[in-house]
Image 1 (cartoon, rainbow, N blue to C red):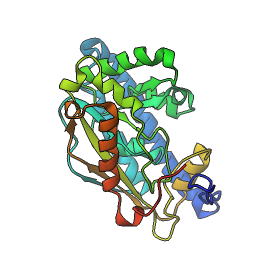
Image 2 (cartoon, rainbow, N blue to C red):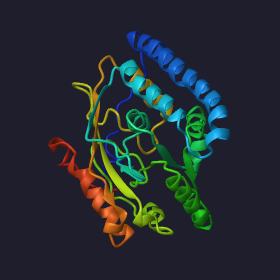
Image 3 (tube, rainbow, N blue to C red):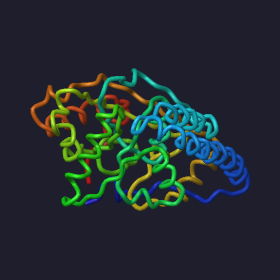
Length: 280
């Protein structure tokens, strides 16, 4: 059976001529901002950590500024609808690819929950560790300890971001939300004090480009996709839709909560996206 994963792959040609020039200047500016900012962040953490412990009153402001600057550097439009929540809780969103991290960080102070393998990815792993990412392994033996870490971070006031689809997609659809991650929200009375905010990321391709332009999925290489974005003569846009937060206690189970969040996230996809099936 042919599914969206096994359909015609996203065309990503190596840059040539003017494309390499765009890669060079966009890459140089982006690298200076991201990794220069990271060095400043690490210095701030030396001050912040001993004074504030788990709380991070300083560094998230720098992270937001760096991520927000990414979009004008790349030429990608950026728009936000709704308001990021302020109360104790977590964020759940659909997941199209690596640019989601910058988009969600650009307008709020959040910390991501990622699979443990990300910590070892060149460049990205270093950034993720420095920005307080929570790494989890899909190992039942470690589930309880990992849940305790997430609970401690949430109680410390950190807004953790989860991608409940469990994978990235082509950006045109929302896959079924896995309810496993929602179990952490029902631990030790957390359900009585926290809320969940669903967020929809809508990626619009450059005019005339494949609608899946910003999607990054399956076995697509990061390096090839990175060049694909940097070399583009025209860029598209991303829109973040912040939905109303919901109380965890309003749902009798993690499956009910996951189902509600999935439906809300999917409801904000543009009409032209709605026809894409959920499969594979």
